[in-house]
Amino acid sequence: MKVEKQSNKGSTEQIVVVALGGNALENSDSPTADNQKKVIEASMTHIAELISVGMKVVLTHGNGPQVGRIGLQNEAAKEITPPMPFDVCGAMSQGMLGYHIQQALKGELNNRGIVSSGVSSLVTQVVVSPHDEAFNNPTKPIGPFYTKSEAEALERSKGYVMKEDSGRGFRRVIASPKPLEIVELATIKALLNENITVIAVGGGGVPVIKKGTTLDGVEAVIDKDFASAKLAENIDAHTLVILTEVEKVALNFGKENQKWLNTLTLQEVDEYTAQGHFAKGSMLPKVEACSAFVRSKKGRKALITSLSKVNEALRGETGTHIVS
Image 1 (spheres, rainbow, N blue to C red):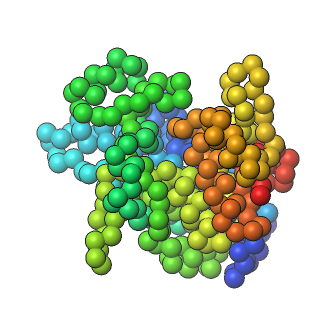
Image 2: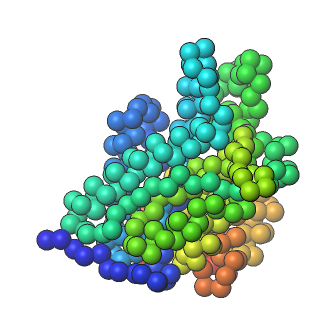
């Protein structure tokens, strides 16, 4: 029996922005297209469940591993075909991941007999400031992990900036400016009004700067959590959900005195951040993005949890809920 998806035209109460991590969209041991598709298909079962209970979902996603590999492919083939600049690589990763996500999600909805207007991925540009101090201090990790000796060799041979990433190895880092404006915002709103599930600001969106009446891409990666929070704010979403590898946020993560957090007040976010509890390349941007969204308007909610627990978390049964 087919189930008609409940119409939410004109309603903002049900809008939930769900941010998927780039590492959750692939098999890191064998990152082929087929394996990526299989991982995404499994992931979309959880998202389809949200839609099946009447939520209007907007999906965002990371692209760190994927855009890093696109960059490597460009570098390896530069003697055969001209390499693309990094903003173009970001757009390529949006198209690749968006294609697999929309295909997998629509297939899962069809399997459940849910009738909807459709699923659409949108290559999204996000305006940044050319004067953002991030351009002088690259921090955003992209691509695969390397040993210290491998990282040092890449710094010498390629001129990459390499930094240690949360105890997991070394990765290339590039500038990560803050998102100021989502260029395709009106299109996203129009699709939502037609009850289309939208996939947007993939990888944080393609970073662009304004030059008069035109836009130019820049060599950077916008943090997908901050871009997701900006999108959620601009479409007046009710809830922002940032998915990660753990079910909850913790203090003293990985230590004997580790403490899982069910809730985080905005005051606690400020205190714990000042105390250095959240890793810069891992949990810190997630916590900061959630707190920015909650601060932006009274009544907004945010939570951090794992993909496998997202439905339970939205029912209040698990996850870390950021509250005012």
